[in-house]
Length: 258
Image 1 (cartoon, rainbow, N blue to C red):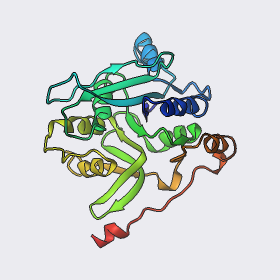
Image 2 (spheres, rainbow, N blue to C red; image 1 turned 60 degrees about the vertical axis):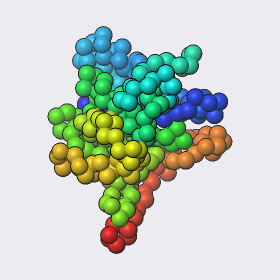
Image 3 (cartoon, rainbow, N blue to C red; image 1 turned 90 degrees about the horizontal axis):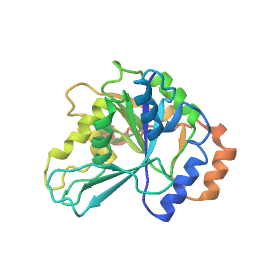
């Protein structure tokens, strides 16, 4: 079965803490054994040598920080626990002298553990995104095959620009080989020109060594995005999840003009 790593971005602030609590009380806290914390997944995988792990969607809250103690020009990525009683927190520390967008650090870190733990796909998700976990699992089963077929696949809610199509925030997913490729881009130092925003990641896909399959999730979006208010979050969870999946159109006008 396909293993899908869910990386939930977070900030080490009081608001970030409240957002993590809302997420734990909703879509990652349903009791479905197919969804578990990264630490739990890792422990069970190690104990069973990867053969008896029911969890298919390991998740971690990801905070990316710059560490002034790092003076190397190369980026360093460290996994560590920061918050007491929040065992899912994995903090990625990157070199403060790096002029590049730090978002690649997540992909660098997850690619370092992805192959060892047989992770097929990696996702980057905003903490203001409310996911329907059942629809997520259904989407994985239908659209995202396990290894060896899980290669050179990338997608999300697709948008178009003059430079082509790309998967937009707040939910981007890609196969582990592409995550490794994006994570390695830190070695390309062009005075900060290599921004790793969603658009820039889409651009980098054009230069991968193999043709990349772009999966358009627009007809079956299994999430609500940019929900910052606690009441709105809870109202959507309690009363509006049956309205998912929702649909959006791909804006192709700018692509056609190009």
